[in-house]
Image 1: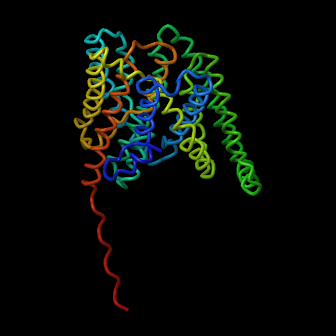
Image 2: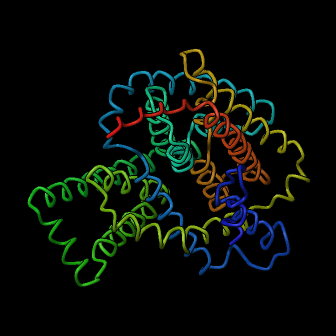
Image 3: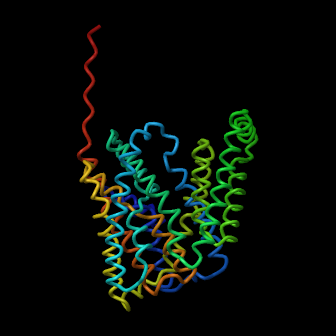
Length: 373
């Protein structure tokens, strides 16, 4: 409940995951040690939550929005510029802190969080060409970063991870073709009505079976569960996600497994290590500030500064990096906490940018009064 309580604070726009991470820090390794993040049952629930969270993130990418097509060229240009600046900053940070993880930092700072930024844009009710462009930019950055992260965080297994990523992508493509074919023949609609009339939740059951099968394939091929969930989310979104399925996924993800995952992540982090390695505090600040500066380069192409800062929001990719680094011991002590610190700084900037964007939203013209009867 800490997530909804903090998110209910007026004007602050605190994401739900902040409260859930804070509780995990309090009861886990950093705090009182009440729960053990290494417990097999807890880890299993966290993996399920991770897969579901990334599945929902994939369904948030507006892949079917035809109005975004005209915005793709400028969005790609801005994403490339952001990636170039992020790479330069990442090389400097890796050299300054002697970590050798420049590629990881570059992917993190160039990423955007569609699951965080797009709902904020929708809630603000703003629209226009600049909003369409930033929406396309966030989707491109999010998808690209999620694909690249497993390759750069563990270079020794990059080839295996690349092969596994291709296999999972092909499986997701097969799922999309199957859903499209069923939809064309009317079978999907018949299944939907049959399930709804008999309260069977067949679409949810089938989706979970496919999701867990892809997750098992990801584990077998040494690919992150993150990619399995995200790829399936994109496939379902491209084929058209039924509203009933979206509500069911929202219920089980946001109501149970999503919070469990973020509590597990907070419990697995050892923030006290930042005290033993105070330099990593500066690393986290550098990652957060570097991400914001990298995305603000879009101002050179005419992008409003508030929207550029809004695109800097990071959540899924840093969480995945911290999770992979913790589970597979790929990062040094304190480094996962530094990654999360940088992500939290971008979330704070996004909250401020959303308030500024809302204040600058153009007022709708007042409709003329109706003529007298």
